View: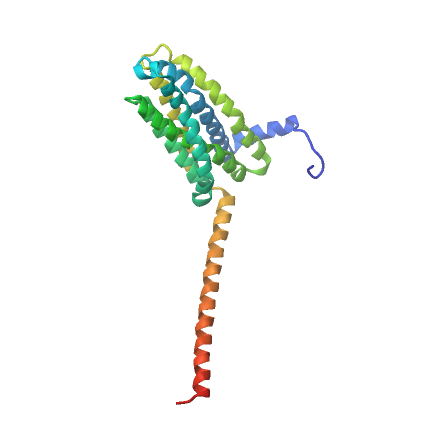
Length: 255
């Protein structure tokens, strides 16, 4: 139990949260980034339900092969598992901001290539790339928001990211319905997925790196410097002891 007991959110606190977003450009960019990250996660995982149905008009193999359809759907999940496992190392090595930018690049590239796919194997390959982006973003986005946002709005921003995952899933069904009457509907459904990460990529260019990561990185560099200095001191001490030993031998056994 936290110190002072558990307190509920008051209406005035919620109003202050919204005022802080509108009045502070930095918090607004963080809020948009949080929303887009969750939205993209939900959209990419759900849009395939409609796109796969309409892709049968262009690819006979998708229409007749159940195994192929299941592979197209599942590859994003497989890619997400790999991306999430790899994302931890990437976050520590390159930082939160660069990890999110990489995920956005994977999202945009995957959306463009899927929308222009000439064959089902291309969709499968790009679903893996998009899945990698989903895995990296799903663990990096909440981490970055929690470390970069002011304490007063931190919980609300992280919750926004989680809430809009379901919002992204709902939006994908709306987009699917909107393109049902258009020729090549599935290409539009998959191609639209590239717009949110493109916006997020531009927003992230104007946001700073996580202060916590920068602090840890600076600490690691200091530790590496200390280790190097200690090794150098030990080496110098060993050389000095060796010279002193030779001098003692010369005194005891002069030529």
